[in-house]
Amino acid sequence: MIDLYYWPTPNGWKATIMLEECRLDYRAIPVDIGGGDQFKPDFLRISPNNRMPAMVDDEPLGGGAPLAIFESGAILEYLAEKTGKFLPKDVAGRYRVLQWVHWQMANLGPMMGNANHFKNYARNIVDDPKMLAYGEKRFVGEVDRLSGVMDAQLSANEYLAGAEYSIADIISWPWAVLIGRMLGEEMWENCPHLKRWVDQLRARPAVDRGFRAHREWGQRELTEAEEKARRELLFNQDSGKVRAAREEAARAAS
Image 1 (cartoon, rainbow, N blue to C red):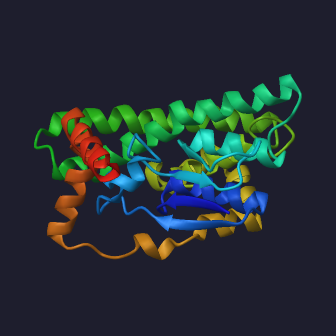
Image 2: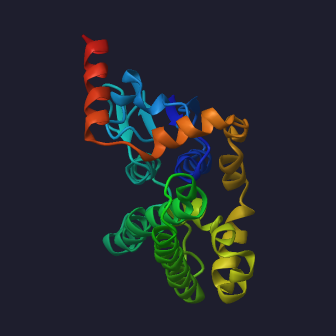
Image 3: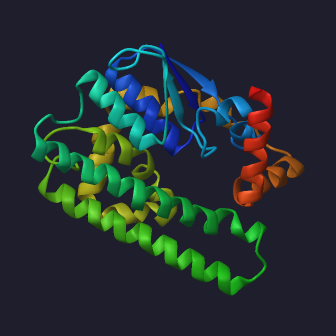
């Protein structure tokens, strides 16, 4: 059995989609990132970066003690290796896939997260309109550029890494499906190949199941005080807070 520490966000969906595609038995354990679950000692022992998703495989590849893994890219690579699915075994094919996996981790995910921050959260935190305008233009513009990168790649390939569906698609789709919300639905007219791919993957039953997994967990409406506390948790962390959380985890373990 695999324990998946999860919250219904794009990064969480990567893991649930992969688990559904691989038909692996798993148990989803909620990590309410707005409520501070990611700083609890038990979770920090699994995910020292205090981010989800993270997982523990009780029957790991190669045997031995239960294996804990954090970072969505590492989780998908591990599950692909464990099951022999969605990652080619030949060197050239493997790295065609892995370069797009790393592209997503370094580009699409972070840029969309920053764009969302400036569009939807920063105005409640920052009073400087010039800073807000610059941040929004910078990161929304980068999302637009990255959409063009994907559209160009998909104009010549059925999937991001070529002719076969792979973890490159699984890791990128949960962010790509939200691009219309970020840039406006009219953006799809300029990225028809990207739209074809988004819709094609959305029609896969396993993608649908992973995308809908425990959606209700994140749908509770927050009070103004809860929303303020949530912003503090998500956007005002520093090394001191991380250190305090680690010290608490160490005390709990002793």
